[in-house]
Image (cartoon, rainbow, N blue to C red; front, side):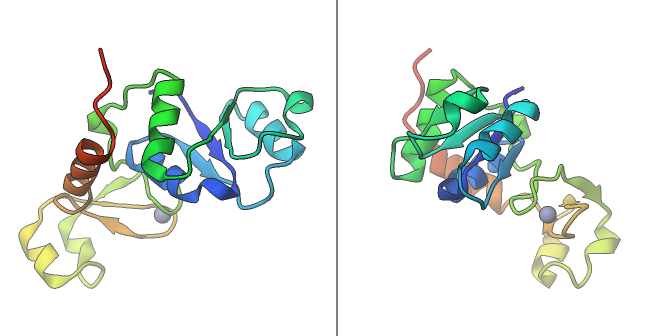
Length: 157
Ligand SMILES: [Zn+2]
C-alpha cells in the first residue's frame, strides 16, 4: 500500500477510484508536461498519464502510461502493471475530492451535514479535515465492492 500517485488531467476518474481504494493520489489539472513529471518524481509519486510523448525522459521518475479509455480498465492497468493488491481495510479512508485522510467525526457533529435518515441510522462518521465533507458506511463501500466485483476481473494469484 506504499504506492502514491499523481494523475494527469485526463485521468480524473481514475484518480477518484484510486482514492476510493485508499491510495494517496493527487490530481493535476494542468498539462502533463515536464514540470508534472518532475514534481511527481520529487514527491516520490508514480506519475499516471495518458501522454506517450514529451517531458518524461528528461524528468525521470516512475511513470505509467495509461492506455485504456474506460476507467475500470485503467484501474486494472495500474493494479496489474504495478502488481498492487489494494487493502480492503483502506477503502474509503480518503476524501474523494481532496485526497486528505479522513478523521472520525462524532455523531453529534454531523447534524445538518448529512441527511436526517443517515444520521439516525448510522453510527460511524468520518470527515474530511480540508473540505468538511462527511462520509458514512453503507453508501460508498458497498458500491465500491459491487463495482470492483463486476467490472474488474479478479486478479490471478
Ligand atoms: Zn475533502
